[in-house]
Length: 379
Ligand SMILES: *Cc1c(COP(=O)(O)O)cnc(C)c1O
Image (cartoon, rainbow, N blue to C red; front, side):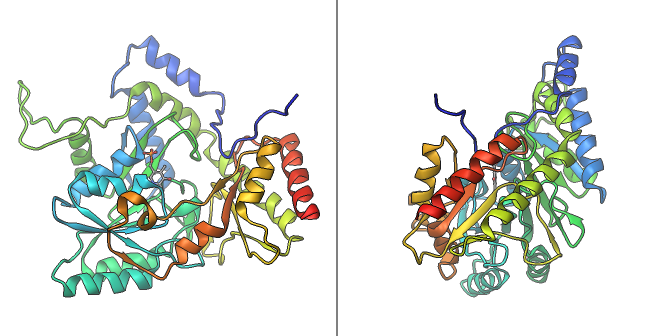
């Protein structure tokens, strides 16, 4: 019999989620608003601090869509977007009829390179096409060089949207990811650090901005007894049922971060002895990663590579996955402009994400360790 599947990152319930969901049923709050939505927003605001104003929505992608709309992005505009990311970062730019221009990564954090960002802004301004917004990501939970990026956006007066979908619990210079820039977004998809099955949040800096976000997320209904609209809105509000899962998950968020960081330490011990592999690590103590996913890169001396290892692990029923394929290499974005030097593309070609769930037990870790040792000993 085959051993049970070890997933890359699977949902991990803490135990109190159902209590909040049951309450939603008992009180008949089966709607896209209610005490769980408000409670989950309060929990997130308290956790993030710095007067964060949180609007919960149905997905991280939806949160980015609303943030871009609030940033004034519309048809014909351009937005500078990190290339090395999941499509959920870039697609909402396209929903608005705007065009993403992709920015390469730097190799310390794998995130948006401040140098290429600055070069792109100056070049686009020369072409009289000043970008409307910048979308920076903390990939795999690793904080980007967000202070430099923020500084550049201030200098050129461009709205900064922080995609912290993978980075709840991460910090840069002691400040929580999800509190930088003009807007931040979070995701509670099934594989993220905490999950509501599906969901997201838009983090605003003022009460007024939060009110506008909720207005837009609920079809932009004007204040009138009948249904009246003077703006195009969205149906993106979070359900009170799934918000109950979120409230329970907030009680175990810190445990999840500790467990994922412990996974990273587990991999560090294994790969210390493997010369041809580098584990992706925090470049300095300024960076505190939740290590949402632990990732490795190969330097290819022995003709080993990610696909070989990925298939080898699959034989042990262990899931792993190539790094995100950069957006500027995606067929759908091939013709978009790109500023960079192939850094993200090189990472994509030599990197792999390893099982990183906060629910990995010691038995599963032993299986992973044995599989990795046997791969590197026999190759
Ligand atoms: C998951 C993710 C998103 C989108 O979030 P959803 O809730 O799945 O819509 C956006 N950006 C990044 C970097 C993500 O990992």
